[in-house]
Image (cartoon, rainbow, N blue to C red; front, side, top):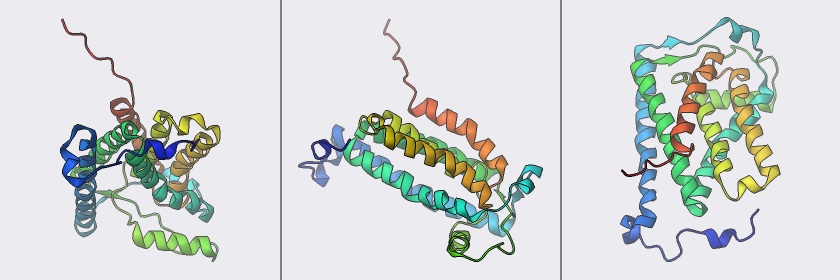
Length: 227
């Protein structure tokens, strides 16, 4: 899979003054991230200070806490970041599609959080066991707050990586890579409910947003013929 990867590096001879050239304009998509981060934490702070709608259903109470699912939950962080970095460096067409997908889904999520502040109150008061995984879960609770949850951005972005892998000329040729990527994409929505970071309703709400993002960014659209 990795044969010839050095040949695909998209920036041989690149200088910053070249960024406005057609072949490098996609780098401007990176500007989305500082804007997104600022808005996410601003909305999160407002929700924490002004109150939020608690997302919960009866099914959530039937799903037990299980610290083993913190593993795929934590893997989610490098999972999507590395795909963004890889595609930006070696498969620019995939990078454009992935960034389009992320910009669409994350922007819609932010708009929902801003209009309808929401969160969850399902963190266990006491863990059933005391081990490294519960320690890691507690650390995640401290870093990843309990607001801005519906729809789940973990779910939408996780499947975005799988869609990007399917569009990649390199990943789609490796059965092992595709199995591992899709396994993680599927385990993410399972993990968020078992570590009590999300209600199952957050996962359900992410499904139509995931499909919409796929349609916009990854679905082939036939160009209209000129009359």
